[in-house]
Length: 328
Image 1: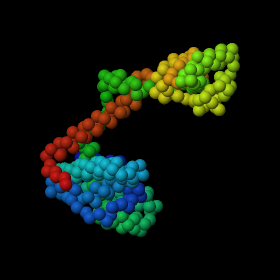
Image 2 (image 1 turned 60 degrees about the vertical axis):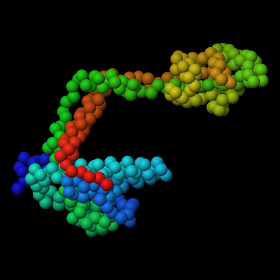
Image 3 (image 1 turned 30 degrees about the horizontal axis):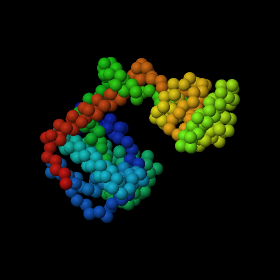
Image 4 (image 1 turned 90 degrees about the vertical axis):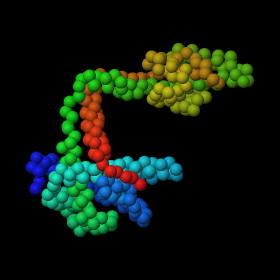
């Protein structure tokens, strides 16, 4: 008999479980690998094929991003996480049985019908053929869906919803992460570069040229035109236009001048290494930090999620502590 107070949780769980899309039934890339035992949880076996089935979507993404030893490392981490997830699921399902809860068959049947309707356009034959192509029997698929419903329901019963975070915690989080909320500071920069030619003994003459250019700019000469005529920087043909520049893009001395220069102003001649530089800041943006009042909803939501995750981990830790778990 179904425990009445638990029935509502099961109903809610069926609504919360995400629909299974065709992507979740993607081909197992290592179907030819001999299967084996990945873990034993209180006498129940988790196989390597189950682990690969969970990690397969992540692995496909990794294969497009990495190769060689790094790919092998990333795949191992993905499978380790998948195994941990499967162990936790098994513990939750076992706890469900231990509490003598039951899940009526029509819950799962309804779930399967929803999947056929939503993901296969109501075509049951296509659904069955897809399962067969992925080496799933209908009964195996139904068990997977039943376990999902059970896990969701048990989490709802054992992890209390977090509905409020203390103002003190919100204030502390804001103070600690204030730099993260600050938008990136940028300047729209133009630059003229004149080599010093110091090795040839021409540094004084080159600086005189730079000072002459600075004088023309002070008299109203267009910066972009001066850059096109005199600059030996790679942006010469663009009138010395570097576009929007963030901090840590320029060498330290140039960055200091650029980010302290008022909008529309031209710098003095800056000597740095083998070159003289003249900078102009056309616009500035960023560097603003949203107020605590503006950030409060986002911070509160994040802290609520973290607290919910913490409570779930405590519950799972308790299940693990009482269980016999062996991995291979």
